[in-house]
Length: 325
Ligand code: TXA
Ligand code: MG
Image 1: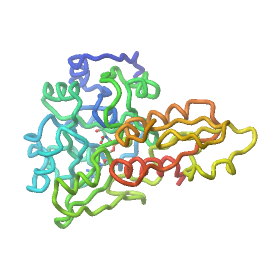
Image 2 (image 1 turned 135 degrees about the vertical axis):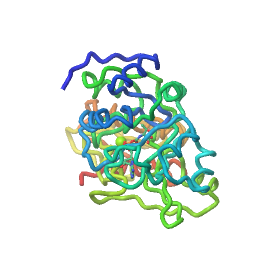
Image 3 (image 1 turned 60 degrees about the vertical axis):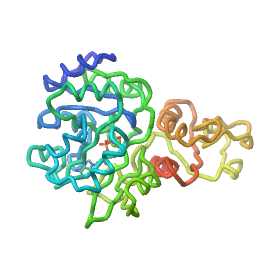
């Protein structure tokens, strides 16, 4: 494999040049950073799987510049799906739609649907507008690890493996997109994410069916039970009980949803949000997990967020981060 002297920069023209010569580039989105390549070039798509160390059965999201491009890649765009896209895009929603043959099977891992999304970050939108092809982009982390929400996070793990990281600052949403599709006419959510269920229900006007996969070979493998996981062991617990869980000689760090004043003196606390703001908590989650994973704590504890709005997606990620299965 080629070793690169990875550059971090803010020039989308540079990113475009690399991409158009078949290289991969990390791109900012409003959700998390993506590891992007030309979605219509099977060689670039193969490189994405290699660089991420991702199993070939886990398909990639195709990023397009505007809603008008959907029908180039999807053979059907039902009115319910269009309505959602019109309301949310550019934004944290991914639609699973029947794919056209133009989309390489590698991208969809042989599945009949293609995942499409218009991301909201201005630099990446400018990039997509310039390119004559869409970008396949999974989150820019090694398979199974926490998603990156800054250019630095990407560099920490992918430096040397790609030529360029397009730096768009910290991601605004901080959680991956919500993935939805229509099964037997029912609006189905396959991954909780940056668009809350409540918003989805209001926008669609229908009740949402939730089908988060956990077994092997799922419809959306980002839903494997253990995923988004730090190296260190993470325990989910009600922190009221924390005193009894501390082990002598072990440095303990705690992820709290809101700053708490009732924790034992000796633990290191990282609140997701000082005053319990849900959007801020979502924004900080992956960064906090990475900081604690790289820090000197031996063991990590976390409490769950309130189980509504983005709290559901935060809790989904915390549960997967804590799972060893
Ligand atoms: O917010 C996001 O969605 C970010 C940014 C970069 O756009 N991307 C992201 O990609 O989270 P990734 O690859 O880490 O997760 C995408 C999920 C995977 O769980 C994958 O299995 C599912 O989407 N997926 C992609 N294409 C699919 C398809 N054709 N059918 C079913 N699931 C699909
Ligand atoms: Mg991912």
